[in-house]
Image 1: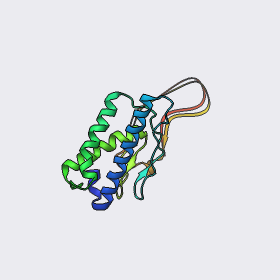
Image 2: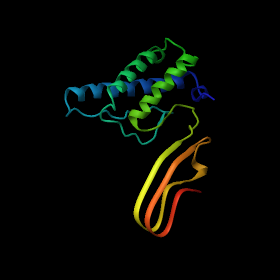
Image 3: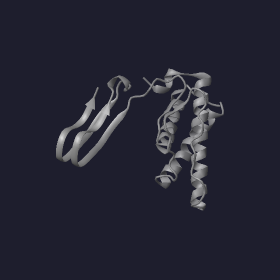
Image 4: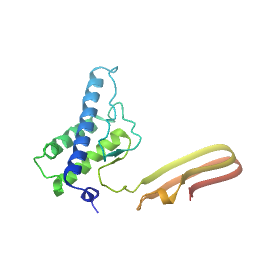
Length: 174
């Protein structure tokens, strides 16, 4: 199911406006930092009611110039949606919204859940823990299955330990 199809109308427009404003904050701050390295980094905007942003840690600078260009292009695509000129529920608008959200989430280093949307599955991968000496318990990943959204995936977890007096576990699910 398309995550954006779970909600419509004003809630969707509000979510798009938030994504657009957050993207604008990133571009503005990144440009200022390009001109002056002492300029303040981008900030995570307060999410409007219904939009959930979990523990944002905004990137001070874009990972690449291509990231900033992509964000500009996605803002241009979503501007007519944000301003109400294009129906946000149309398939093309939904695709543009999802693409913008993907880049904003990467720049925020946090998930963004739009109004009325169910939690999206987690993709957890590439965890590698190295311990020289273990006295007690070590796990590469501990997770409560009941708290993981349906469809979540865990892969690529490894633990390497030298001297062990206790328990070493790659993945511990409860």
